Amino acid sequence: MSDNATADFQEIIQALLNEDQLFSLRERRNKSRKNFVRPVRMVLQGKPAELQEGFTRDLSDGGIGLLHKFDVQKGEIARVKVNRLWDEAIVLKCAARWSVKSDNGWYQTGWSILAVESPGKP
View 1 (cartoon, helix red, strand yellow):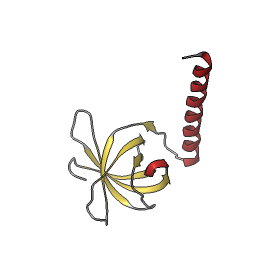
View 2 (cartoon, one colour):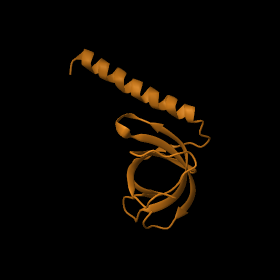
View 3 (cartoon, one colour):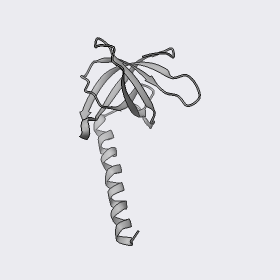
View 4 (cartoon, one colour):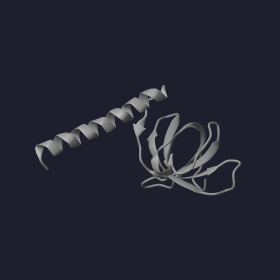
């Protein structure tokens, strides 16, 4: 890679990281979060028992950020099954706090964790 291409690439990467940091600041989250990427399966309460899939973005001791291909409304309740590396998946009962639509039908959402439930189907 040429020096110009390397510099351009570094600028692009820095711009993406800055954008993510600004997004985090806008959230006004009062608890620190950690990047955490795992597959999830979800079922929204009060809707047909259709299993939805997505990924975690981040995790804190009070909430979880998700990335998925379906819209949710603030206040909706879901059971979110988070895969673990060595143990059974864990199910979290969560309430949607915000949703932002991204390109290609993806949504970034923030959820409050209401309860940790036993492993099993969401």
